[in-house]
Length: 314
Image 1 (tube, rainbow, N blue to C red):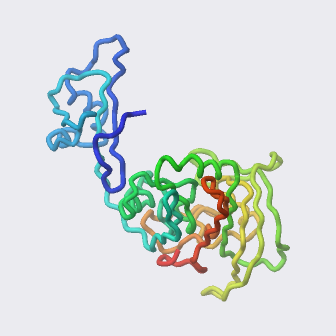
Image 2 (cartoon, rainbow, N blue to C red):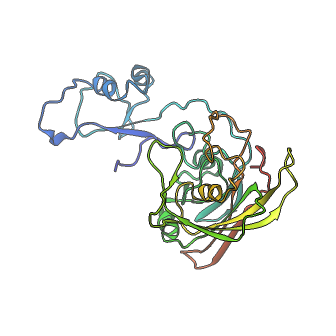
Image 3 (cartoon, rainbow, N blue to C red):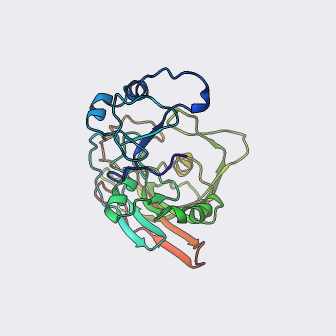
């Protein structure tokens, strides 16, 4: 682990860091200067000469790295990357609870929980660290970028372990709601159990026939909504996952013949631009229930979002 960064967060993001070679390598260094070493490590990602000229690389003591500085082993170098422009995600982050230890938000669809890939500035962590003044804010569980609803975050590092432990040990009750078509011949409620697997590089997860079940969801029909634009029947379903496999609820609904409305992966993978926010997935993380691991209080939080989810309300 690196030591504490000499640079403050920028836009809610920690500075990036690099470490020069381990001084115990016992071989002469192939770089004469820090410019040479940084160029080899970073030239494909940043304009090293511009960063050096603007004193954007710093050592552990906060002093600027100069290109002609002799290369030395066992050094940490810190810097902030440039962020690409990202289209703003519609919809508001609703803070529904905040105390000393946790923040519970009602997340809109299309907003990533953590900065990743093409979604950095437009992520819950980056936006809320700045807005709430909480530089250590971090989510305690996963919520897919295109899923709306409740997300729990810890305010400081010291609170992360007890709250993350609840999710790891299945001590948090989760309820989701989804909008999907109606099958008159489908008997509900039903419990779906099967074996799900997700291969790296493949967008869809898959059901493995005959394998020991590793995914379980309870599915109930809750109410019928007004017909859609083309007159199709559609309803709201209550989904209670017992396990938490990737895309579990989406696969289980598809397997019942009622895929969740707005799903870009199931039943078919759709080629949708990263900045197309027109069709939210109609899946909502609607309730969290747990006993607080610090003070023992029973806590329940509910989303206020309603179906159908729109780009502004998702």
